[in-house]
Image (cartoon, rainbow, N blue to C red; front, side):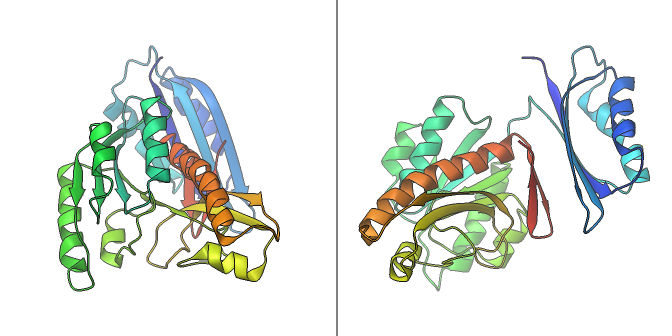
Length: 284
């Protein structure tokens, strides 16, 4: 496939934005393949995702970025320009439950996720055999209340050495510190086994069963310092009934967790997610 460039951008809405971006692509010998946009009328913000073919462009990636910067500056634009041959380096964090981890690993083996899985990090030994099966380095950092800060420092050191772009919490049952989160703003994706904002924190299926809900769901979101309140990327639900036990909810919930989590990771890797405030624009 030909190499492409993908621009994610946001700025205050104003006349001529689409024209100016299209004109830049045209004058750099590009051909727009996909273009999408959204206006938040409450804030007056304009959001866009533009992907274009670089065949015959004649410019290096760095030259394209340098050429685009004056336009972006003149428009007061927040922007990110990435290229299809740049594969994000992903670290997978997991504790003892394997369903989300193994689903991502299987999808990756089928080339559904355009990234390099560079490490699996855990606070337990349980997933070592899974890591060995997929030939991914496995590192264990046991965490207690007294060792949490020191262990997180070691994890961050490892992630930096591996030049990690994205951290994926595949049912990692630890609350990351504010300091850890600050190193990867909007680059830590979590799966929560509840349809947020309902039933935050631990044991959401037990909470849902006690409440007698008729739908349960899963939510994948970016991690922020506030527990389970980061910008939401993807959600879905499954219907349940009064006959379902907590164990039934867990079984049905794990199915939906896998799907929601994989969608969210794929959307991020394909550069389709634009966070703003505590929301996201997700371009399909």
